[in-house]
Length: 210
Image: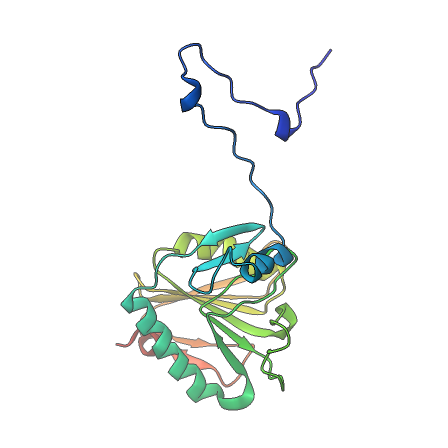
């Protein structure tokens, strides 16, 4: 007869004879959080506006501190996007998007469809988004794999990663359930032209301030 597995809550750590009971660490039960849970934690004070976190696939993830090179890039891109797009779209800087029931990322930029209330009544959802941009240094691998799949499966038309360390732009388009179907790396001297936003065309040198 095959032994049945215990439910997670009944699994215990096997104790060795020499273990001191005080040194035994109880098993950690990881909870899958929903967006409702996440914002409720903010309402009751478990999370505050000073906590630099985002909800990704049910996990509350702490984001790295924003250093001056990162914030400088964000400031630069804010000016460039505003100059090119004007009032044709809303440029949300480090604000949440409601991707699904268990994901609410806070990308560095989300270029949104115009809305009269400027999204005061409700955070934007994927259908409100033209383009997402992440300024990526220490989070490059996560942004290339986890974030790219998250945004693609949500149907966000276009996603740029600004690779700060290598000074290149990774442009993702044609989203699908298996990821973005077209990924291009653009280096110094090249231009990033958005197929989603005809007015948006930026030189890689402009983006990185050369």
